[in-house]
Length: 263
Image (cartoon, rainbow, N blue to C red; front, side, top):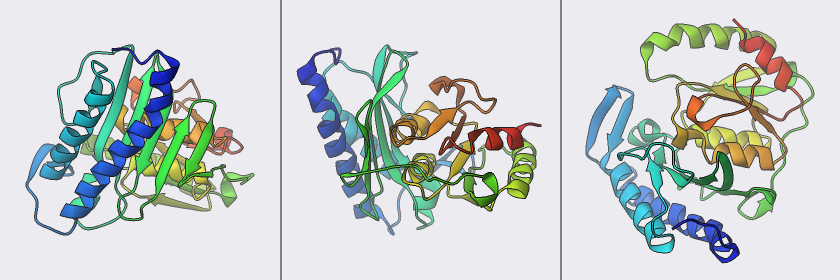
């Protein structure tokens, strides 16, 4: 059933918040305990029983509230490109979680006609909840967010992430060297959704990554733009969910970041 009525849209974000919080409860129940794990595409690309339990619970909640609306999720077979859908990463940062290392998050977004309408990203350990509504701003635990005012890359803290495919690491190392030479410092945190939220709150000034999936990016990009930041492709073109890449910043240093990313 399409989420087209005003009444249905008014229920979107509250339902999504309840869903990611329910996922967070599952994470906290299992954190620090032995869980079932299997490898997907590489030793760093893992799925745990916790991912699957969260996915089942969140999809159950969404299906009850919005029957017939597809859920595109990391651990299930997904439809092609639905006109509207929820995008769920049940446990973004699974490898961190399995090592007992923060951060990791439950990330959920709703997209329609190629545009994000609502987002909720929950860090179960800190209790932080990042939310955004298209045209309605971004918030952390109910307080409005704004990107940093850093005016140059030299005074900016920048983050990226490692690709699962080891053949891509030479490219990333070259990008990291170029960005590092121009930035204040460089970080990797292992959780794309929260890296984007950190740009939105101003803790990070910029972030880039590629080789990602739609559920990694679907929520965080809306949080950034609603906090006043900019997201784009790595060559400066418009951001597209299906491309699996993002450059995100406070907007002021965006051109500098993109220039450093050029080969």
